[in-house]
Length: 223
Image (cartoon, rainbow, N blue to C red; front, top):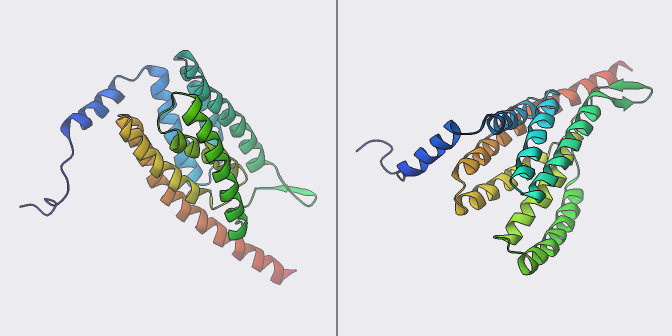
């Protein structure tokens, strides 16, 4: 018996389907997937070039989803594309007094997040009710919840609120469950990669945040 014999066996057919999926991806869809992963990696590194990667990937996904008549997904990616432009501007042109400096990472109070979570939850439940009762949507409430919070959390990334990583952890964890239940195993794998990168991003941004605090304290002592 091996040291890992207690782990559940991975279904070969699922792994084969995932491998075949990536091997048979159309060229532009493959590029969009790679750029999406690149975006997450660069965000975790606090690298401004995440936004060009996001813009191109979401532009491609906008076209891809529109071509297969997934209009809401296409519209959502139009929003992501606009936020990529906004994020590039915010990260590059942050005004501090009379000068423009790099946008610092910030933290919000717990009370602020509690209010936002309650508000977004009410919105998700309301939209979920509509989707559940007036459309043929599957997992209407869960799908609506992840979408609403993803829209909001994308904005948090553009203004460098460090808690965005905690939101993404929950969103990706729920997305993994959703995609697996819908048989979208390759997409679930991508969500898992994003989930792991959330931990990397959380650690990296905390390091930068602590460095910022140290620089601010040093500047106050010198003033």
